[in-house]
Length: 181
Length: 160
Image (cartoon, rainbow over all chains, first blue to last red; front, side, top):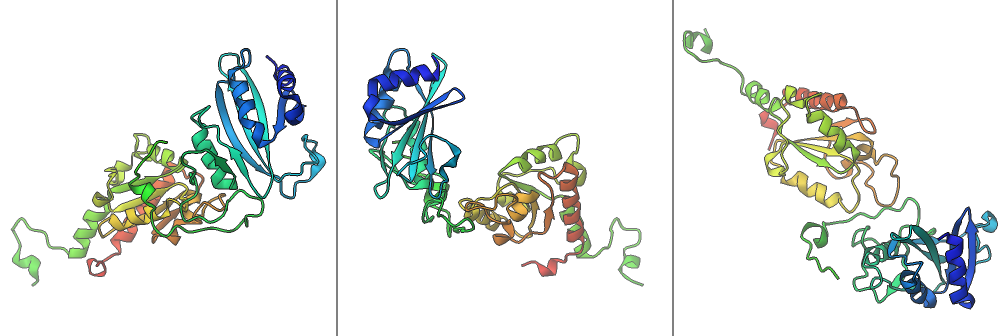
């Protein structure tokens, strides 16, 4: 199924709850509010004919100071952050993109780790680098930066030259007590 | 006249202690490979047949710092890993030497960002820096020869 066909079915199902849609060179994406995230992703995963059984990636975007001239869809966005979900159907070989608008000051998105287990680590990465919390995540702590790191490194207002030294090996590097939540 | 005359005819060779100990040390370097990036892939070429670092006596790669005297830092060192590198260095028995292989280990390379140490000399004393991204195996062998030259000029009196 083409991405446009998927988008048309998503629009038919969730129409009024979708903030915006756009298509660029055959790639389609929708933008929604956090409240609709779980229903939309669960529907994409389970709907016959769409069945996006693989969550390929979860990423964050910080639009601070973003110039709206690039025509990427939400030129007049009122929110600073977005979380982007890339889903793919291994059976049907098609993909789709869902963006979630995350407005300050809350920065909370529902976790989808129970829909796809891999979301566990991906959401930790977004939390680590952008400071967006995932409600319902079983183990939301940093995954890339060290434990003494303050702030979130990929935010646009993080100073580009600011480095933070780790004073001692953290326990979870040298002798990790792993709890696979 | 000297000791040599007394020992004439006996199966004994007289030399200076520094000479014989440095001779032993420089042709039996035991490297500890601290490989974190593509430089470590290049190091595989250094120890393999084409370049063959055993021609220089440094082929006995140890994966325990307790058994090594040459720390080869090959690759990007992140802030998160920095205390681990320091600990590995501290665990190596004296005398010990450090080679910083490649742009990342020497200066952070092009990772001028929040997560990468801008040169391992912030953490451990470095004897030889190797330029390159990654360096050729010949450069690494060149660094080992440099270390050997350095060892030749050392004295056991200066080590702790």
